[in-house]
Image (tube, one colour):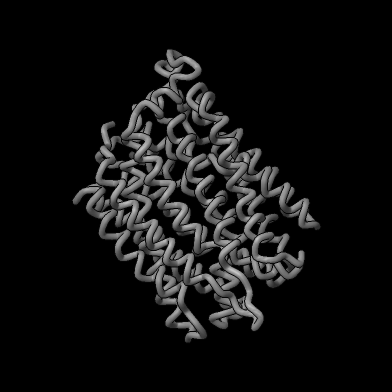
Length: 394
C-alpha cells in the first residue's frame, strides 16, 4: 500500500510539472501579448498550439501506447516534454514561441493519459476516484504553488525563468521515475493479441465509449472557453495588478489540493455520477460571476475564484473515474489516448473560438467575456444530459 501511494504521489508530481507548463502561459498572457505585440486571436493561437499538437500526437499514439511498458512510455514522453519546455524558455520571437509550444504539446499533451492508464491498471474501480483525486491534486498544486512561483520568477526576472524552473524540476522527477517506478507491463500479454486497428474498432463500435468521449470534449471545451483570458480580463477589466494574479492561483490551488482528494473519496462512497452532478452545478455559479465582473474588491474576487477552482477542479475526479471505466483493460491505454486527443482538440478549438469572441474595445477593456461564460455554462449543463447514457463497466 505504501509503494502504491508513493507511485500515485510521483505520478501526481509529474502531472504537476506538465500542468504547470500549460497553466503558467495563461497568467503570463498580458506580458507576452505586450512583449510580442499580439492581439487576442494571436494569443489564442499560442494557447491552442499546444493543445492541437497534443491532439495529433494522442491520435498517433493509439496504435502504440498499449504495445509498450507504461514506464518506458512515460519516460520517453516526459523527456520530450522537458526538451520542448527548454525550447520555450529559449524563445525570443512569436514564431519560435509558437513552434516550441507545439513541440511541447506533442509530448506533454499525453502524459496525463499514460499516468491515468497506470492508475487504472494498478487501482481497482472501487478506489479509483480517490486515486484520480490524488493525481488531480497535481493540477491543484500547480495552481497553488507552481503558478505563483512562476509568476514571481516572471515578475522578478523575466517570462523565460518559469520555464527554466520547470525544466529543472522535471529533470529531477525524470531521474526519480526512472529509478523508482515499477515495471508496468501487466497489460502487454492481452495487448499483443490486439491487431493494429482493434483499438479503434473497440472504441468506435462502442456507443458507450463514444458518449464518454463526447462528455469529456464538451466539459473541457466549456472550461477552456474562459481560461485563456482569465488573467488578461482580471488585469484589464477587474483592476488586478500583475502581482495580484498569483493570489488567484495560490488560494484556489491550495484549497483544491485538499478538496480534490476529498471529493474523490466522497464520490467512491456515494456514487460518482451523483457527486459529479452536485459539484458541476455548483461550479456554474462562479463561472457566471467571473465572466461578468467589473472593478471589484480583491477579496471578493478571490472568494469567487477560489470557489471556481474547488468545484471546477472537483468535477474531474468523479467523471474521470467513470470515463476510464468504460474501456476494457487491454484497450484502456488506447482509449485514454483518444480521450486525450479529443480533450486537447476541444480545448484548442475552445481557445480559438474564445479568442474570436473576446476583444478589446475602443476604451481598452475586454468585451465578450460574458458571452463565453454563458457558453461555458451551457456546455456544463450539456454534460449532464450525456452522462445519463454513460455506463462504467470495467
